[in-house]
Length: 153
Image (cartoon, rainbow, N blue to C red; front, side, top):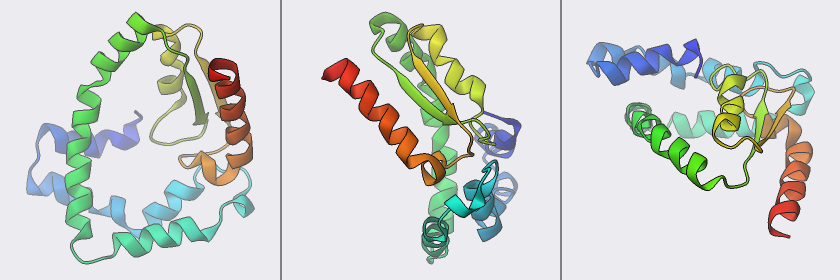
């Protein structure tokens, strides 16, 4: 994860009200727009539908607190990374990771790290940001079909 996750990690380490409140800006429409558009080469490929729907649901009464609870709980996912990596090393399953190379949160080294555990992992980057499917659905879908055809076909 990148430095953009530092406020979330501070909340994990010390779940005070101040650290929780520091994350409220993550739920603002300007942040949703950032998540959908940062690192996107061609903004015309980003439909406003997904972002507007996200903003609509984020604005529902009580949802902000739920989202902040989820951000706190995300540390449970990170706590499992070691077990996941062990499983990957031991079982060497086929791995496909298609990543937005400009993702401001989950940076390319996170995708490349799969190769440490599964050297044959197929790691691909698209010229996009956090929501790469918004701009590269066809390319990612084709990669998935190719990968699945090769490994389960």
